[in-house]
Image (cartoon, rainbow, N blue to C red; front, side, top):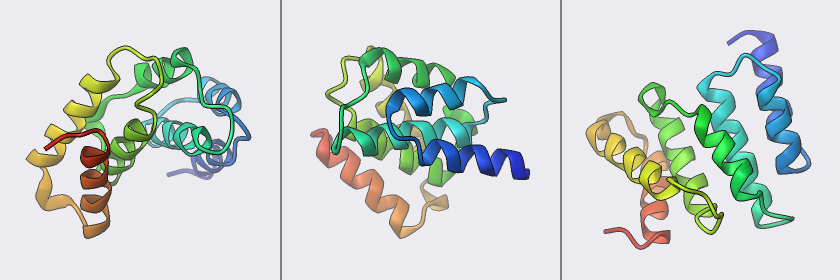
Length: 128
């Protein structure tokens, strides 16, 4: 990853609110690391400040290409979607299910930490 791409990921992760994170995402050559960073930041902020709107979450989801996610990205995005499950967003449950299915198919790639995040995500949303 280039210096510029790393800096953008850091800036997204440090955004003060969901709108700021989304604005950074819009202004860049987006890759899946940045999408993951943005969704994670929104999920992290949701519990300590104003949660993102359904439209903001939906916009981030529109950038997602789960088939290009690493195991770590699958785990982080599953956790983020579980944290954001109350956002009024279409397709959030469908995408979460898709990520979990991809994780099952690629389970040998996951570390204990990644599996822990996935299991928490599934349990948090009432999945078996």
